[in-house]
Image (tube, rainbow over all chains, first blue to last red):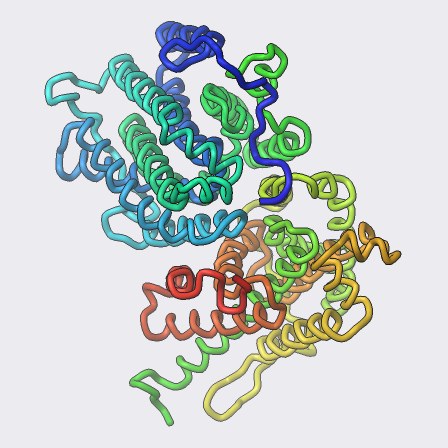
Length: 328
Length: 294
């Protein structure tokens, strides 16, 4: 791939003191994040926070692929949406518990990711982006026609159910703690993946794929596994979202959703640990507070896209990290 | 000759014609994408939005200024092409040293802005655009009725595609263009103003999209979403055909339009997805695309 790579860190590499694989600065940021997660529901509307966390999971999953492997999927809405539909169907029609519904949704999203990833990694760069977009559009049309998705209406009135069969998730606060727990689990899992030997190979592929191949790694296998992991976690995000709002609709599988998650990750900072979360917070907050402006929200999103590409390629967290000379 | 494979002939030929028209748009759009990609190494995501702008400018010319279809066919591509030139000069030109994907992201942002502005101004419902009087009516071909305008679209699109191909393959300008696609610095060293050529190429690609938009205006209702849904299918067309060959993308465009039309007759449920399924098959059999260089 020609030119500057998608993510370049300005921070010098070298031995740094690490706490559970986090650098000191990252560990401080992690503690701040935990504190924010605990305090936030007492000040902000829990449903808004849950929406934010679901998109944060989605953006983190997406970042695993674009930020750490350098693969730009333009069709992640497909995994998010399928995760949502399957989880909603499991909870509503089969009456499964919420955790099982989300797991089933995530697994199917992962299977779908395995098939689509296997197809898409045959081509590189922009072709990869176009293929993932086209495959996602295929899923959109599938969801429009398939009987179980309810077409234009979507799956409505999905019960939140009882966690493990006995903790009712109907109260917003209980649901919030559940969603927060799911988010933290996904966040730490992604961190673990990125800092494993497997993750090191992923980063090597991002920096220089031919060289990684010449070192004896089957890069396609690594890319595929990363793709499956990312799709599965996107499915977790979609499933959780459909349980929070009790609805799974075509919006979740539409291409504009793929664009949104890309925007969130870009705004927060590609390849940063906390970027996707911050990006999700910014975009979800913007959509919430500017909702009455109608189609102007799309225009503003477009402007942010352009500003990020032309001026702030590191994203918010990347720029802050650059300013403080730490890696966040 | 009333039935073919158990399908009434008028239905079959009607859908074939519709497929051919869709194919004409696929061909014109994927041609523009291929020309832009060849020189700029950018996938122009805003191509669909610019197609929509072409249709809207034609509608605005008629609605506000009373300028009819024939002038719109010239003016609309020129105006939209000019916006393309401005976009390239102000924004896209800053990205050539970066990863190709930033070009995709930037043009995606541009398409969001264009679409949002038009949706604010004109809402989501479509605006009708009348077929010009010279092209209204229909011919009786014996086995089916052929609306004159639809025939015109197919013929004119073919004419545009062949002209573009001739310009690129047979003229001096086209030779410069092909040379710059292979090795831009070398061509520049020979004294050709490559940056200006890149700007004009982007403008021309965008103008092609706008021209397709004007052609589409009387067929589809003119609405802000008309471009984006189309462009995703065109992406699949481009993956199937490969962007290496101009003639290849034209053939793939028309061919897939016809396949889509036939699917509407024989298995309507799959008509929206058939092109994506073909893309999957092509990826499995020939990952570089039908006309692509591996």
